[in-house]
Length: 270
Image 1 (cartoon, helix red, strand yellow):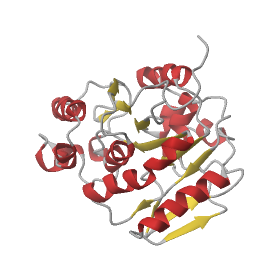
Image 2: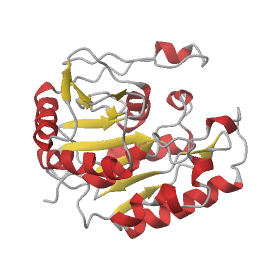
Image 3: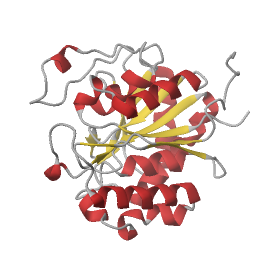
């Protein structure tokens, strides 16, 4: 069997937890199709450290790392177990690569970049989850390398997820349901075409070459998880597009699966 696929998820605003929309429905359908992983490894820009940290908690708490949103969000929990053994395997790979200092964090929980999309992908919270932090000084090449270092875990039936946003200019955030800005559509179409072509050098140059890249990402941290997921994928992995639409006028919810949903483990019965 081919190794497990990897996944880039646009995790949206925290309200995505209670207003799933088109993107949430896409993740719900994908979660029903995916071969069940032994664990999920997720990288989110909402946990940034000077080196790299890996959560090894057996029962990671739900972190509500936001404010100013509906109180109902504070009541939500995602009680997935951790997987300390596979988390330590990830830490071992990172230590062996000798790129960043690595620590294990036994108390850190799941930030909203992790648990909000997982509410839709695996709503029963029955798949173990652990996080790998994003190094503070990360560029496109290093994000790809981070994914490639973690890639052997796909052979252990770990689903590697980069959770970010395909566009992320919060200065242009609009409440409610507003039409997407034209530049968002142009940037997304350019990125989608580049991802589908699958050429590493083209992917690494997206923020330098794509139309409206600086407007779509005034800072790169929400884009880099896409390169982590792509770097973790097999070189010949097919790409499946999850078209999640655009919310708040500027926030693309498009996501990408690198590989086949039923790869990497025993086939699920139809």
